[in-house]
Amino acid sequence: MESKVSILMERYEIGKLLGQGTFAKVYHARDLKTSMNVAIKMIDKEKIVKVGMIDQIKREILVMRLARHSNIVQLYEVMATKKKIYCVMEYVKGGELFNKVAKGKLKEDIARKCFQQLISAIDFCHSRGVYHRDLKPENLLLDENGNLKISDFGLSALVESKRQDGLLHTSCGTPAYVAPEVINRKGYDGAKADIWSCGVILYALLAGYLPFLDSNLVKMYKKIGKAEFKCPNWFPPDARRLISKILDPNPNTRISISKIMENSWFKKGLQLIKPIKAEEAATDDAIFSVCEKTDEQKPAHLNAFDIISFSSGFDLSGLFEERNKKREVIFTSKQPAKTIISKLEDVAKRLKLKVMKKDGGVLKLEGCKEGRKGVLTIDAEIFEVTPNFHFVEVKKSNGDTIEYKKMMERDIRPALKDIVWTWQGEEQNSFDTNSPQNA
Image (cartoon, rainbow, N blue to C red; front, side):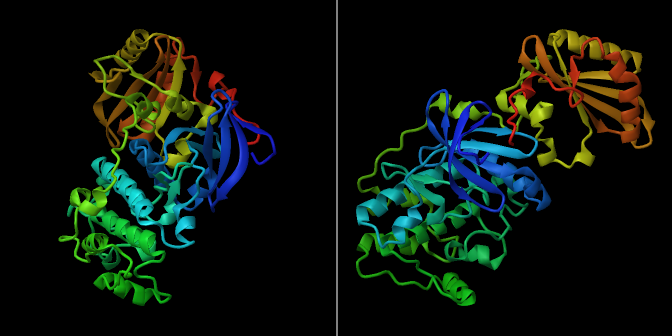
């Protein structure tokens, strides 16, 4: 992928390296169809599996799918080969906000504009149950017009991450920007922690340096815990008051985003954020949630990402689950959904399995007697690519794995041969022909 002229998936011309980390490289690229500039993050699958970063990468992609806002770097699509994952993202060529701050304080109007856009984007994230948890100027990019774009959701959390106490408990982030309650390790509200980081960023934009910076980490944490900082004399009084309300060490009395938005200093020159059109937001729907619920017996429709992830040449399952725990098999069929359902019902009847139909093209096949580990239950889910081309996922949902495997090999697979086009992994199908040689 690092040759001078390289084409990815017959769609993107890969350009210069923009940056790299331990597990990924980011390249500038051009869409061959539209000539649009994009950034492609190439993640080494083997490396992230080895260090146990599977959930983090999965969460980052899921969060970026949810975060459709004009001040957040957009994820256009995700592709994969056996060795790499490719995240095609919005190209932001203005660089990091950090580079501007490193040169000194920003003019008040510019600092306010960046802060307004930051708060707008974070408010949107929170409304979607997403908490960034690593807000800092290095993760804030600027486009050619000076508009801010939030990037790097690698440490983000979803609302589902909260424990029963309603709080998050993973201490993460960059020390100089992290909230006191995160340091205390007693649980914290992700939204309030993000607000604190926004306050530190605002201070840095107006001052040109950080409020709590200290070479001794313990001393810095003590300053953060007590909110010991001083505003320079050039800070406008109303901005000074706002920062003191944001950098409140008590999360219960810290100002909320809604109150920040009502603040007079914040509202000066505020431009309404133009929402992303619905059709744009839908281009990357259901990256991980494979289907939407539909009418009884109607199979779910697959998008391009789903097809890639099911296809043997682009199998993502090794990234998101341990191989030895896989209990599903997948086959493709050129038959219509009704024919597939009818065939599965015939097989179940022959094997004396009860059939229960569920929404979204799911059939549940259940044994009539107890096995070694309870009643064997098999789910068969049908996904529509076209009306006459389907993926079918068959997996054990209960019972003994050995019994399930025996039934699959001895009875079910042979009985389905009339409707099966290919079983996943047994032969290359048409979706594998675009696999890049150098991936």
